[in-house]
Structure formats: C-alpha cells, structure tokens
Length: 100
Image (tube, rainbow, N blue to C red; front, side, top):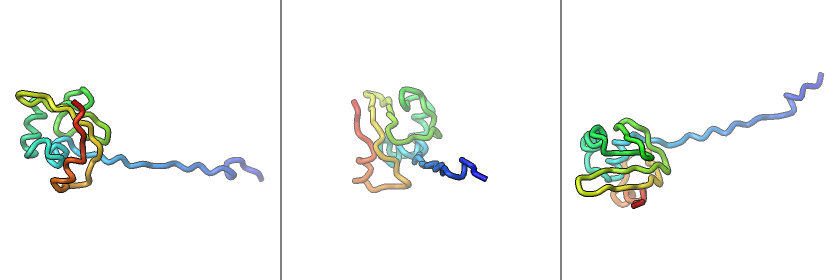
C-alpha cells in the first residue's frame, strides 16, 4: 500500500543557543570586577538588557544589548560571543563591543 508519508523525510534542525547568567557574563567579560558586585548593581536596577531592567539570573545571549548605569556615566555594549566558562584577560575584550 502506498503511503505519502513514507516518501518524505522531515528533518528538524535543533540549534542550541549559548546563554549565560547576566552576573556571570559581567564578571567573565570584566565589565564588572566581581560577581557579587554585579549582583548588587543588577538588584539596584542599574543594568538593562535590550532596554528592560534585568535581574542577576537573567540569561544573556549573543547580540543582546547591555546597559550599565555607573555613577558618572552609562556604558552600552553589544554581546558578540557568550563563552562556555572563564576566559583570559585578552579574550574577555572580544566578548563585547561598545555601542555608545
């Protein structure tokens, strides 16, 4: 018996998007020196992801825009790459680009 379903193969491509917690990304990228400080700054509402206030546990991904309000200025960066773990000082600067 002929079945049209047997003639077609459907392939689904699953792409795993690399994500990382906001506080960890801020520390690994060296935008903020310590993870506890990144937690405190996020809890105070001074960190935004794509224009929305972000808590420390918010997952960030490639192409997200992070804004950090420091006392005297605001830093706006675009995430270019999300690492799997810790990175060297030289590689940390390649994780983002300044958008200001």
